[in-house]
Image (cartoon, rainbow over all chains, first blue to last red; front, side):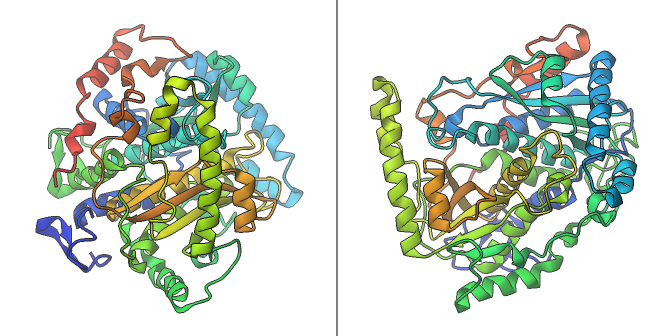
Length: 264
Length: 264
């Protein structure tokens, strides 16, 4: 592996200066994390009906539960949905929202939009709704005093942990957001203080796509990362040699994500 | 490792039924991901001044850039802050917000709150603000037609990827949310369409704490995960043997997260 040349794998210690990187993971552990990050996909069309063993689902749920949370609120809940009635109801709402959405696009994009497969509600064996209970630990929460949406963001972090762990377990996850939040709330009987954050479809898959589907469909390109980095304030480009060297490094690392591509 | 007994490591294939799990990562790669998830900490007080090599920062930024995003918007930007003037301005706003926050807690919690170290703005060598450009790809975005906050959530997923990658690289990250969003916007010159999502402090650390600080300080306990899982609708507990078996599995796996504890 060529992305960390200074690793002494046996000792689990990086040695650039002998101390500052002593908490680095070893090369293999770093590989596992980056592999999950770069091979995670939003799965819509490749679900298999096979049951997910509870041992697998349990590990993925623990990953979600150990997300960061503002004031250690742990505001998330996990509603595991297998009832065909509930899935059908959600799917009906998706169909309505999907129709409404199509009309919102400019005419030249409507045809492409219509043909995109955007959910796997029925064919995935399990749906899971991850929520945020805004009142879980009272009204005043450390870290939420000035940024009121921090608890919502905590539940989003749980979603991302869930997604990465599922990928490592070989389980595909698709996040369905073309739903009316109020309909979702009604169907799942959510109390007023509970916000639905993510409606997820999960299951084993025939394959994971090599690239995000909207990238592969030429809907939008991957943005060059060096255009997304600025210094000290919005839009301020690199103005000294150190800042320029970070930009150069980002350009050199253009193939870093692809180096984890799953070759199987 | 005892969390996947059916792994045939050499072949990179799990064999529970010979097909459905063929996209599982091997045991070592799974280990790396779970280790990052369970050992990630919100760092406030253990920052070292050592510079973070650009090779490391570049990899962490790529991890963030490969987060999921609604409609492939990639709405994030990364403002890298090293200017002492900017850091001081942010820190002044933190101090003000922190004082305001203290007064919001009930009197018996104010003393504990005051003594918590909640940021490392000055002493961490780099601060990074991750933002969300709500207009990056036009007004109509696939998947954001009915849930308007999906782009904000995409940037949060980028934060979580960033945080996990930093942990694997031995770099500590602290998310500072006790700030006035408008002051942050003014200091960083953010345009109206750009929302500051996370203000992060990063740097190498003397150590990563064994547990989240608020858990260790007995501010709040870790919630039992089996109380967070319901079935088919809010609050509906396991009602058949299959659902009950998932709850039992979660209880059996109580020590799963600790099994990844960094022993160094």
